[in-house]
Amino acid sequence: MTQLCLFSIPKPFRGASERLQQNALDSWRRLGSRVEVVLLGGEAGVAEAAREFGFLHCPKLSCNAQGTPLISDAWNTVRQATNARQFLYTNADILFEQNLLTAAEVLDSWPANRYLAIGQRIESDLGEDVRGWSNEQLQDWIRRQRREREKASVVCKDYFLFPRHLFLNVPDFAVGRGNWDNWMVYHAHRSGIPVVDLTRAVVALHQPHDHRHSGGRRQAYVVGDEARENQRLAGGRHLLVGSHASHFLNDQGQVVPMGWRWVPRALGDVPRFVNLLRTLIR
Image (cartoon, rainbow, N blue to C red; front, side):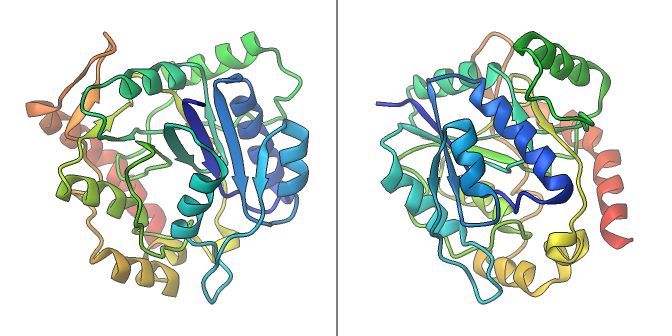
């Protein structure tokens, strides 16, 4: 049985999105045979990318009236496509390195067997196609970005790692729109599921992009019809409780309670959150 299935719903492979997504997919392929990758949806270029990288492709996904794929059907589809013990949903522009596998193994052997793992991303654009880079070149570049670049706000959640038996009944959220990601964390807290912060253990590198495909960032996350429908389905925005963890993976590879550590973490996030708000009101 495969330990980890990484799955995503890519945007069309056009313009800048093509390079950003190819870079991300290339980093996933470098994770090796312990990870099964599934690409979902029928957007332009997804089938071709799946063939190029040797990934499984599931083209059919239920969509809302606007044609946006639904999170609920993505979750159901990937469960039918693989028997993996763990699932990791990620946006298709996120690069990972081998420490993702180490963190997944720790959680897979954690006695609780109930968790939702999230983590902050690092913003950095490689500026080129990395498919010709060696593993050493890519890993060195990612580690340098970790040292030199700031993390995004904790409210920006780009990946979710959880065991197969959880999140069986997810509402019909529109992917790529606001509020569904907060619901994931909020629902975990309400259900007594530990929320584990992987920021110290996992490098998740996000390549910046525009939001033309969704009418702009503010439209996609705050004021648009789909963002508001996601908010209705979620029962609110849940911005604060939907962004913070109850546990974290420390430098010794142990899952420990967050405890009082959330206070300096929250205070340190204020400047990042303010910058995020500025981008939403432009």
